[in-house]
Length: 408
Image (tube, rainbow, N blue to C red; front, side, top):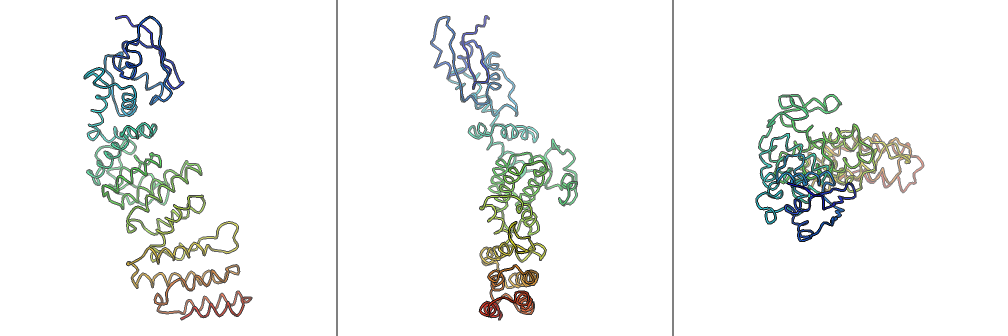
């Protein structure tokens, strides 16, 4: 059959294709409406400025048309082919059963039966073309299938991971304090961490929301988020680190507080101190730490003051922790927890009292932060006040009186 070139297609300004108008219009409702009734030897031209996937994807659907509806639909192209089929209106009403829209829809419906490596390939391409994949619904379906697979398999890997084939058999502890353990210490419950750590922060946010909604083990979710943060930091720029941290903190904030250790939260805080993350994410992190103040140690609280301030330690930050502890703890603030925090605060106050640059108002705020009922013994606090008054001999009598009146 003779093939002519009577249709010129400019795709997003990237490339121009010369096509047989009759063949292309027999599969595309969009082009059929434009040129289906045109006659004569004159060449027609169409310009697409927003074709999904650009020239490379247009070439794929052109091949589909020239091959009489035959094409290899696979995880790496299904997202773009589906979007292009919708864009070009390649439906049953135009070409009967031999239409690209129905073929891609059928593949998407079977997405739940794909292998784990195929799901990862599809997810990777969804990430590269997120806007297209989101509008087509493929991204959501792919994430749902990933989470569903994890929920079904539980601790065991459904197949060999594409990036860590031996990880499902490892039974090492999940100690990620060093680069080596970060790469190698996989337990049966987190065999998938490395596979999904390649996702962008936006996709991780969507993944975590899907996991939470499907009641996936929140302890495992928290471990994944912490692993994700550490793995991304090896090669990330400052802006990328900030984005990753905000997604990790926001994700942790949606989980049950009991699923995240206080030690892990202070580990995130140490990284946050060097980055200018959003105020919202910083407040969430401080609230999470504050709600677990009874699990903190003195070393955790001895955080250097921000650059440009004269005080040795960041007292304002600790005061915000205390405020969050009293606010977020609610009914969980048992006498035991209160006394543990009071003992910790007495140690902290004794540590900062000798600082000659610690302002009176900040020291007093530390002393009165907790109710009297939190302490059985006032000796440690009394000693800290004595040290502070000795170092700050220039205080007025009124200021000295206010501090002394804080003692029970």
